[in-house]
Image (cartoon, rainbow, N blue to C red):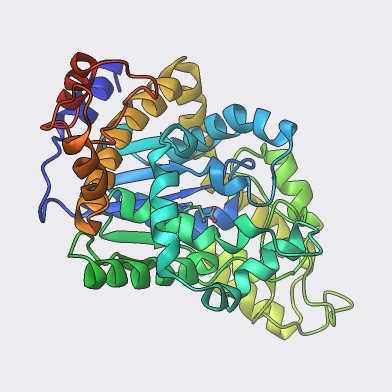
Length: 392
Ligand code: TRP
């Protein structure tokens, strides 16, 4: 895959409002490497879907701030975002069909967040269980204001690019529901500006952690990473939580709800082997060690081509930077158009336009206020006319 195809493609897919190509948005906070839970819960779905849509992938660093906002956390965004994009390419996102962007480099998202925040109530947000869990996991005694607004910011991301589809894992389903409500409310209160985005679920139930906890997560230390080398995978698998009632290889075990078998079902490409292991496990005719050895082999077979592709993309120096910079510029243009639509639909530009019309100093009545990229100290009319060209 050459650099040329990359730079050519994102600009080639022109803008144009209206019921254009279906558009998808999804993404992650840049808090670390991606793991098998991400793969099952969202990455596989993204790979499957992304060519059917105009696909945007957000690196949600503003969302990260809702629970992690130290200077150190923020300084790690570049490295983490790079790793995430490489992981995404490695599992099969085609860079020519994917627009990657950095949320904080599209400041208009914050303006949209503010405009949408009048369309949702505090009790509505307080009823979302995932936010309380996030607050607890982050060790917060009290709910941060920004964390309560997490789904509104997510709605801003989604509506900013007028996404029609949002594939997310379970944790995020309630947030997308809020985005749908806000879109409908905006359209009804002002005028139809937003498609109501469809929620697309992953088809696999979420993957448990290696410790048997319901969820694989970095903060719980129970994850197998896409970039884990084979020995590391083996080490983690051999220590996995399994049927606790099974005291020896001769004791019949339970397959249902057993994380070792959940992983076999998700990653082992040899169904006959899995069926055989499950049968012998139930009958007390196989040791846990063998079941785990075969799982480690299966996961390593699954990860080998992913890691090979990752290394190839990583060796293409500057690739990720090109993708993020081009994708962010492209996204920002879209989002600036959306902000203008919103302000117009709300009538929010009217008051200032009226003031401009009656102002006694020289002015340009044909220049809409709040044009994107207006320098705060824009001194004269000629500057503002130049700015206006960006809006076409
Ligand atoms: N909330 C997502 C997460 O759990 C990240 C995210 C931010 C997102 N904005 C989004 C996902 C928009 C889908 C659509 O990390």
